[in-house]
Amino acid sequence: MQTTSITLNDAERQPCEIWTRVMGYHRPMSSFNIGKKGEFHERRYFVERRVGQAPARPAA
Image 1 (tube, one colour):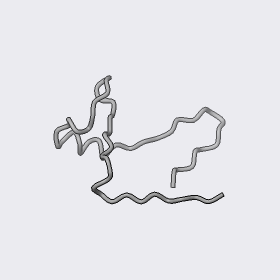
Image 2 (cartoon, rainbow, N blue to C red):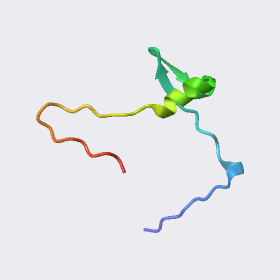
Image 3 (tube, rainbow, N blue to C red):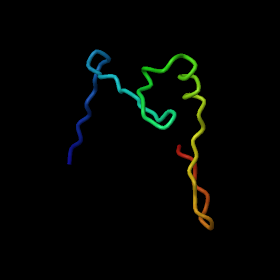
Image 4 (cartoon, rainbow, N blue to C red):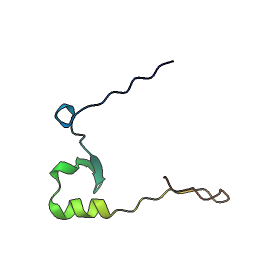
């Protein structure tokens, strides 16, 4: 089986809109002010686990 690779230049790309949950509802990050965008980038993510499970390995 042959795999073909598609390469796009920047003019052909479409921007991806990022939505996140803020104060109980979802909003696009494009509507955030500079302070809220900074808070978003400082967020730390975690994965909860059940008691007795091995710790999750961080994503590479």
